[in-house]
Length: 544
Image 1 (tube, rainbow, N blue to C red):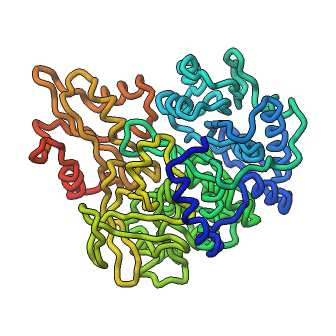
Image 2: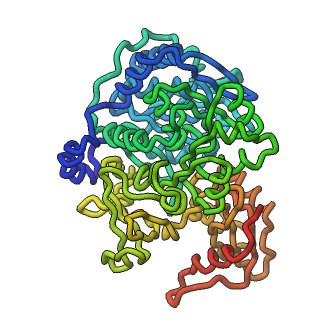
């Protein structure tokens, strides 16, 4: 994992980013080791009904060093790929920190992905090891892994968190931790080498592997630290740490800021509100879903509003009404814009005027450059919509699929986001639409193409178009428009869900609405006009 199409562009831009102090030679392993050494007394607490835990950061760091020693003893180190699929448990923190100490490439997998997505990820990255739970909620991880195991020729180690029966050749995670001498220092690696491959659903049928280097991730952490949305109070994080937002907010930023780590594996507002009072925590940053569900809960009090204090909203649409409601309750809101590929593109601070920080997505962050272009690639001026192109110190190195990189990034390092926005006279960006065929449900990307590919094989389906529908709670959800096959009855929503469950598609990706239509709107060339369907749904009341 060393020869990436963006390597030359990264080298060309390195001098400027270093001059602006946006890049350093720090690595994730070094940051983790230093953070643990500085603050061993900090709490690492998991608020969970099934696997609650509480330990010091020093204890978690010692477990991580033991895990790193075990991986190294098995020959896993720099350049090797280690995946993990765990809910927000203490073992996820141990796995994340431990793998970074080895210098291996970490592949976090969101905990709700099913065997279809997991198989694709493990095959594409040639992962040598995976750390997984045996099961969680309705998901039987081991059964799914066993079904795809014959396809995973590179996979040597399966470490399991849980007490259930182990498949042949697997080891228990807690036994793996103690089977070798703990590592004393993080393994030295090139800061320009891949550190994390984060998978995100997008316009392709399978999730896309987004490659970040140590240098780009450290630059991203510096960007977020500069925004300072969380202030000095620890936050309870419900975003999965298999996702970029949860990884940063839950595991990395607290260690850098000298704050305790607080995670929850299921976002239950009443539990979160109780934890906030007990441990003096803030909450609600990220996708608007997290803040809205807290404010809507009957147990939310003025004291909770005070504890929340400041929130940074992003990762999904931020309706003006949500920001206005929060501000009326004394909660300061900032909006930001980014993606897995370019995590912190624009943003604002709590000292900015309300109209900018709450009703726009902010200005370009330090070192970030933006261009807005029309369909012909020509720059457009303030007040005119255009596709957003960006580049900056935290831009990804490329996709695992070089063909996707070539489509998204030009020879000068400009990343075509697929999002449409408008810049105002103050240089603040507002996202107005998306070219990318993605549904952002509760802050998680859902690929319409992935759902369509699985639904088109169903009896009674001649054609299907999946688009984003407004959702008052989650921001968006998937709505499937189905043109029925001649002579057959089109399937209902329950039948579609059963079909997708058998196919192994993660439950949060299933359509939550289905419309049977005689025809789909098309262009002159026959392409389905999805924007017409989206506009139709936007004209209807958002689903409560």
